Image (tube, rainbow, N blue to C red; front, side):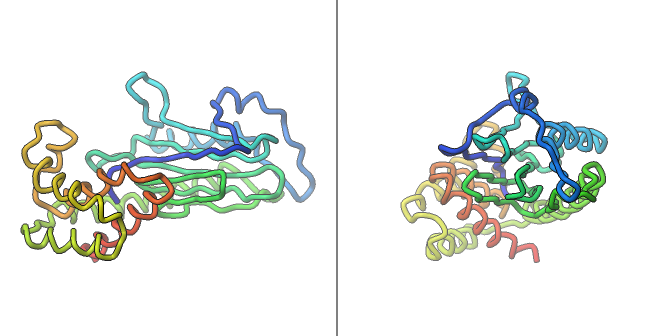
Length: 256
């Protein structure tokens, strides 16, 4: 529920690739009951549906799209993440994760959230599942994508409402210290990070003029949550994802 984005992890049996390289993959033949969707068709169609909703793939400082893709060495499996311009929550982006296979080993699946993690070892983590559909003969890609976008926008609307509550949820110094204690007492994050999270929330966010810190100057649950996720960037990716999810769940309890 805090500022983050998407992460794609590729290992020895998977290669990071560009959209252009994906477009060069040879076509996969289907059967009467199996209808594989070409990887490039999935990516292009997804972007078309996003654009029809006024959502674009975000760009970095060099004007390149913030998208990552990886394919298995046989070309059948595709993993990907997209950071999107659907915002409304300061300091964050909305993210999508996808994975699919054109050899009957994996359904077409998509997840969404402020934090998305996709890995070729089958780790697939986000806030909500948007789409899970097998490559059967009855698959209509565009219909499925439009339904998934309905789910996505509804989820983001709910999420934004929760964030708005956290932004106005004022914390006394003692209340913030209690939450700090609970996170580390439950071993959600390594105790060695306790001083840094505390310093980030009680000092860095208060006195720093750097925009990314000054944005969290208010003494609210949203600022404290971001102090955790900010410091969590130092954790290994595999443990960071679970930790930030558990921290987000703890703060989510404040808005119920």
